[in-house]
Image 1: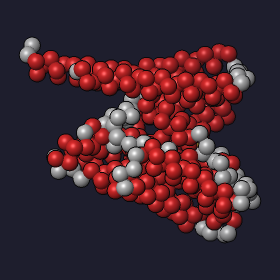
Image 2: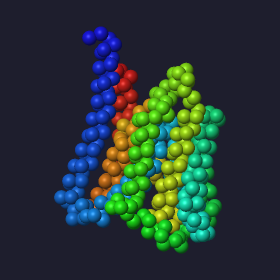
Image 3: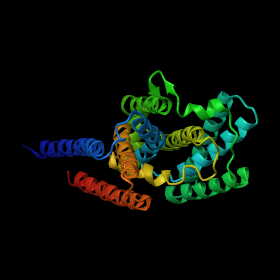
Image 4: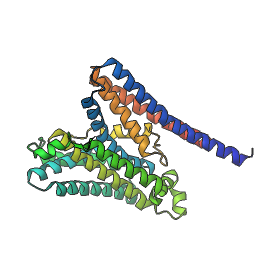
Length: 326
């Protein structure tokens, strides 16, 4: 075997390693389900499973948006705050009598605008993504508190509040929306020129630029997608809470990072998948759901999620080192 064949073999081995990692996580999730089914009387009830997937759906929608950003080689810490602002805007517009479709479009437009600002500051302003999106997060939380005067906005229409518990055909509404987001996200990343170019930009933006790929529009679009999906999740979370809350979405940022990295994404860019992200998200909320059913202290669950984040980053580093040696 010559050096070229040996290198290709190592790359194939690394690809199989990444796929095996995702399969291993799925097996862990299934093992947790079996354990919870044997140790609790309520885990496999229809109501609990529906609740588990509703929770998974909200984080999953946001995490799909982050997947695009991380593949591009960047990060986004403003998603949770975008959820909060989107929820406040949604609640205020609904209480003002605006039609639901107008409210949804307004929230999505807000999310796209936030993503556009992030992209401009990071790419054109050459501000590190961590600093730029952290600043955006802080500013957006302030905006949410100003718009709501620090108060919960309740009194929303019944049809909107009931949507979170409704079904579309036999599928819970939130799960139905997540499925659509997963299908579109997977198609865009795996079947379109944009998706292939995004992976190329995340892998090596200099090489991508020399290949004729316009790096700035690619990263800008990734941030717009992230903002749009975070705003959509804000609308859905407002329905679930039956109110607009300025701190809604708090903690989603790091949970999304954990889900994406556990699912095979790399913080250095160029790697990640929508389905891997979904598996990571399902693992996180299986932990939360199972912990609640077993009466595990919520603070311990928070510690476990924090440790998972560290492990996910460690595994990401391990994958990068394996790839560099391949």
